[in-house]
Length: 384
Length: 72
Image (cartoon, rainbow over all chains, first blue to last red; front, top):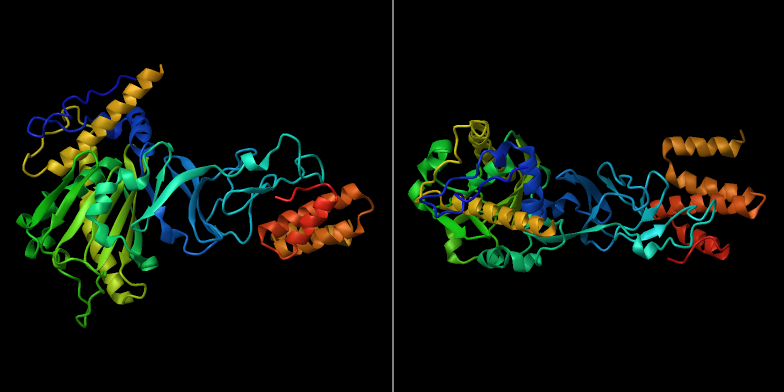
């Protein structure tokens, strides 16, 4: 495979081009990005609320890799490769409660919810459950590094990224005021959108406010383009904020309770940031959301949307109204991200040119992609 | 087919794990040699582990006593 030329992507914004078409439509490049962008750092996998109780287990497929999200007996959330150490059988094939041990359906090797191998029936012959050379201590479930922040379960599949708190130190600092218990709104506050676009187009669209007055005209009445600002942390994250966030109100004028201890800035501000590579986050005085992008191939992405609140028991009707409002906004974006995806099949497209004034956050993401691809390619070359 | 065999098959079919724990213990109790007893106790133990059955600890101890299982 001939590597894509990313030299123009890494130029300053006024002369840079966007990523070449192959980064959106080519399976080889998708696979390259899978390692370079999605497995090397901290990607979003799920939300901790997917496994609310000890013993809850949810199988997930991320980048074609079978994973198992579990809340163990002590209440800690863990992620494992969803495979038995014996014959590689899938251990859990549907969400369920693990009452005791995770029993492989093939030869019944059993694992605790913490991943320890606790039984190997007949491994030494019929009725003989131990065997020389079969060391259970070395055959526990294969763990995946994970970390929970803002209700999201982040994973590092390569195992080689810096600790989550170090890799995302400045984002954690920026939003330190929201680093407190977040309460998932429940089933009425989670929905999925299946979108026919490359995952990066969802990121790029989310990062910038340029499109808001055109794609989300409903915002014009109170949140004008000039009320927005860029959020740019080179090589780490980017997005946008608004200075005129207005709380949602119910039929009787009720609002959601605020997160405690927020500074005055958040009375009217809200911010929308992509934590590279695949988590779109939004914070407001009274709720937060996370959109976890799960790539399904070069031209298809599932967006898992979750809404969180400051207290566990919020008004159900208001929650439903909020979820519906955001769903409308996110659905308005589908037309443009799918349109850009179709556009990536045009040999006449050269990656596009940016507005230096308006596209900074998007260009920053492209530069991050290019930088990580270059590092990955250099590593591959060194290994040859 | 014995009645116990039929009950075991039905419990497997129904994925009735508590019944499997009980029936395999019953099979072990009526086994006429240690190998067969070890086989049935192993199954009772595995299904007990799966559902955190109160008999799991006792079954493991029994298997350890027979030299067929390790403490952890």
